[in-house]
Image (spheres, rainbow, N blue to C red):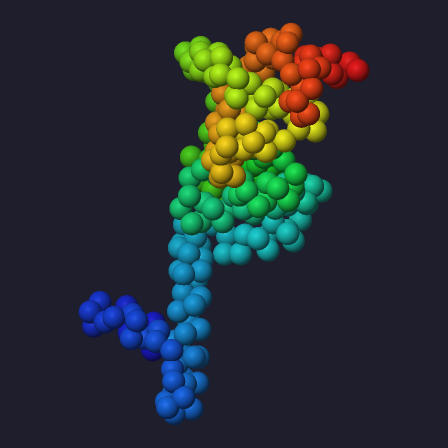
Length: 256
């Protein structure tokens, strides 16, 4: 009855606030109970139900999280709990109409102890695994546009040249050098904190520092980490403690 009314022409002119207003102690008990059961509870779950019905109508799973956690075909995803979590996040982001499916929420990234670049590649691996084990589920729940996310887009020469030019300009400004050095050291396996260094050296807020680090990470990946390290050597200070220890190339670090 309630669903019929909400879909009726009369409901178009009705203020939803009138339906969702809280009851008062002066209302009869039966009215408070009826409003809770017939109005508040259905409205609280209306969005999820509509999204689920829309997904099913498009051929997607009604309960994708249950399928990913229990279906036999999804067993390869469950061998790595982080891949499973990221696949579930991607499916629900797609269900909400979001298109940046490689994005990993900050709280999830920190819980998994991943850098922004590592988080993106981990999400890509989760999508690749999901596509491998069940292409039909992948297409139905993420859409055909997600195919382009399975492999990194090749870096075109103009993009690389532009990134190198930007990094070269940034490295002429001393405050940016330790941040870039910290990111390169992090990629080499050292324990550095580029976001904290950005906050301290540039006086940024946590949010602004995080945004800068993400931008620099993209620039370094596009320009090439080896190229960036060569630009930093041989006199770059150690990024973590402010000492004058020369910055080590990534291969040197791994060899040590």
